[in-house]
Length: 307
Image (cartoon, rainbow, N blue to C red; front, top):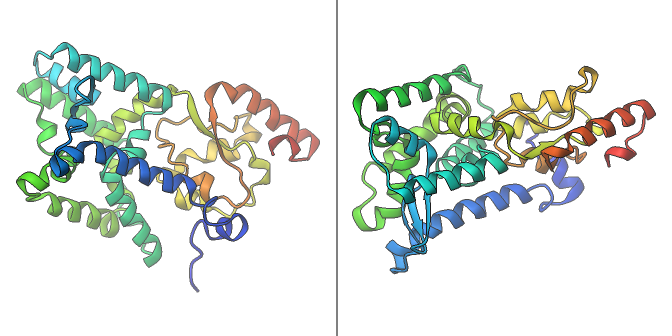
């Protein structure tokens, strides 16, 4: 029996755009951010110089990966003021909108791992090796410890995000080299070894941004959870499905419908694939109101308040 893929029911009911809009917008965002760096090597117009680790846009705006800056500080490197300013700007932005939005809206590795997840679902492959989700936190701790002990920003020499981005941006000038071997390795790892293994369980960059975004203002809310028909499409499509249950099924425990876990990537796939339109983006300050709406809906036995 052929497995029904997540989003099919949503497409049949609401059309292709409504069932894919956040996925399309994410892909456009990833291409846009990469394009900012590519204009220089390709056409000689340098909008953004550098890499995702540290860059300068329009010769004015400095942006620095705060994890890169933290490693540098632990390695006792002196950082220029504009590098520290860039790290502060990025830190503040992701603290507001959700740290792991970097993973789903900016990071080029996401394109590789999403591709592996897409093929895995169509081949109906088993989950494979399961790693503890705390593994990435231990790896993050090790990365910071190595920087402090060795006096080097050691992780950046092996960081797939940095390597892939550098290869894509500067490959036109210097040759991509071993970058495509890395791409193939990540793809095959997620496809054949562990479902969502790299981004979901091992990547210390994702772990770091998850810690940044634990109190972010932009959240996904299961505001229409009374309409849920348990089709499980949201769980199948979500790269971090463990974050959904407290918001979707937590009414009996007095939990509000906001997804509050820092692991949530704010990718919007649960919004896209749900045929009942259960999910939506919501500001964090709506948590109290959302709880009130949920309790009223439960008492009244209607879904009008959650519509």
